[in-house]
View 1 (cartoon, rainbow, N blue to C red):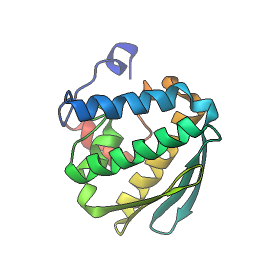
View 2 (cartoon, one colour):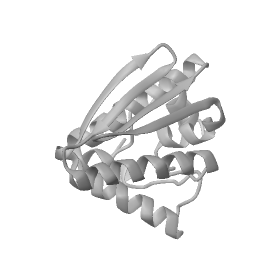
View 3 (spheres, rainbow, N blue to C red):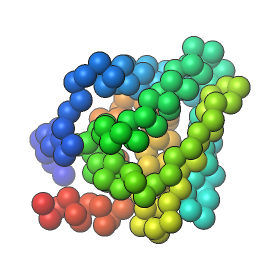
Length: 159
């Protein structure tokens, strides 16, 4: 992908501009700014992932918890984020076949994403890899498309 293509985004599910979207985006940006204060540990399950995202900073713990709650709500309502990114667009397209549960823990959140379809499990694993990149690299990682399964990328190339 050339640099000019990389920065030209096509939003497959529209762009959010309502108050809830702006709030969710502000939380996400706050996490990206403070990425070095975040910790993420994930375990691959036969049908998905279990992950803990934590921080020693009490304000970031609140932001993590609020962010995950907001993403659970957006996911359930089909209110896509990053719909220019093939991975996130696919997650929202298949959201009814993916289960997301979470619980707040002392220093953050523990969440599970699971599915029955092996292709969707692969999608969940790519999402996990993407979130690790956000924690490791912050805004730098957020400016680029996420790693995605070949079947997702092939579908986007054929459009």
